[in-house]
Length: 125
Image: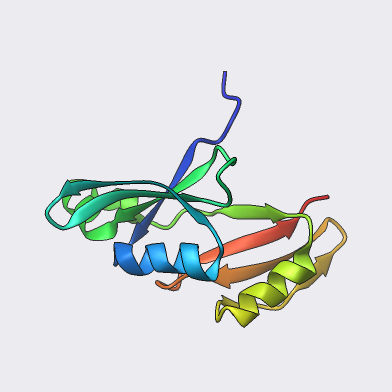
């Protein structure tokens, strides 16, 4: 029935800051952007032009007005094939990162966006 993860919605305080974080610090690309009203856009970013799955950077204030229970931050795990390189690149870009954890089941670390939301990057080879 389900064969792909399509979109993951992140509820952000400031869409422009979130867009800047994902594009300029994390190296993502802008996949789609469209105005939804005077102070809000639909913004989708992804790790590359070819990647199907995107992050939707959605206004937290707008969702709080519509469905306040939905704004809890989702747990999002990203994948990489070179964890050490990704870790160093994020640090160079000014991204807040926790320690690199080398576990029996995989190597990973937590990083934080402009709003302090946490994500995990895990090495998948």
